[in-house]
Length: 134
Length: 135
Image 1 (cartoon, chains in turn purple, brown):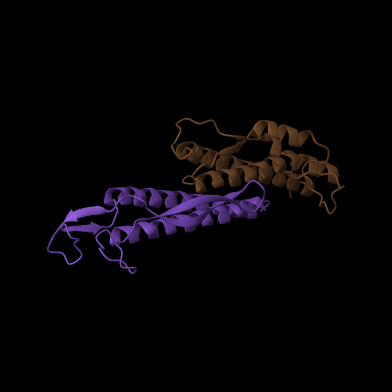
Image 2: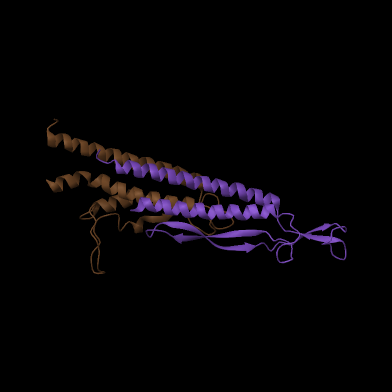
């Protein structure tokens, strides 16, 4: 029954988008984390989406294939008083772009809302289908 | 008589089947709005419906348990009417989903689906009236 696959498709998208929101939250929270668990400054993370077949041959859901670390150069801040400063007095700060993350967050939440809407519509249609002939 | 009843409902049943499939494809497009290199797809509904109605035994699907069995009825065989959407504004990541277009098509298709349901309900209540003689 193809209409039920809509739930799986939209559900996979909700999952993927919430994972994207999670990485954005992690990036924003660690925008100033000079030292991570490996002793290095925190690196911004991004999710990579991929389309996967769901249900019948036509349905395509979403899946997060991997979480990549940003290769952007670290932000150098001159702060000789900081214990993490190097010989020239510069501190390596995380390569998180706060503006980019905010945009990412808004985009993810809008996509999430869209998919919730899709689910609601599919639910209404299926409920109407169940009342055929009554 | 049974064939008559089936015939009366066949058009709307086939349309409903195709609309459900289309809804699924539009949901896929909306779900993959942020997937790089995803190409939005849709059905040529008019041609697909005409082809479905022109086939013998359309509307009643039979199970295929062997590769030698011929496909019958249901919403099979409409795959050749699936196409990729024309791009209005290209994006850098190769994704061709235009959310406005998809949302509009989704809402429109949902309405058509509901219309088909209403028609089926009308036909059924008409038949019931005919059978019971309006009592």
